[in-house]
Image 1 (tube, rainbow, N blue to C red):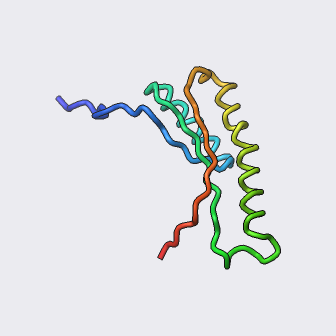
Image 2: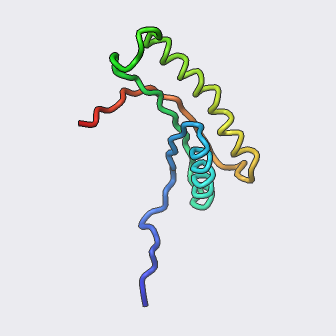
Image 3: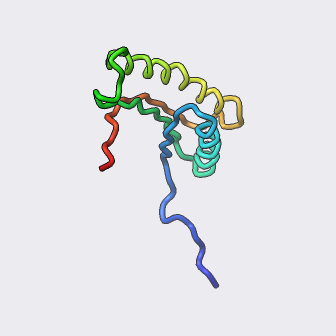
Length: 107
């Protein structure tokens, strides 16, 4: 008789990167289903990239660029949380954060 494919430990936290795209909303639905199934906490994160100086046009100062993207993310994160509130996942523990991080160099 084959063994069950049960997880050796159940996840208690699920980290979901979001970029507010339609694909991101679909991933949010799936992550919420998983969190509900495993009684896990769902944490949404949006990472604002800090681009190398050479990739940002001289017309937009880097600090202003990062501030605008961060503001956009902070304004849209509640909408992602609202999607969870509308569905039956209301009791699901959810946290959120918007972070900045340098873009990795893929050499």
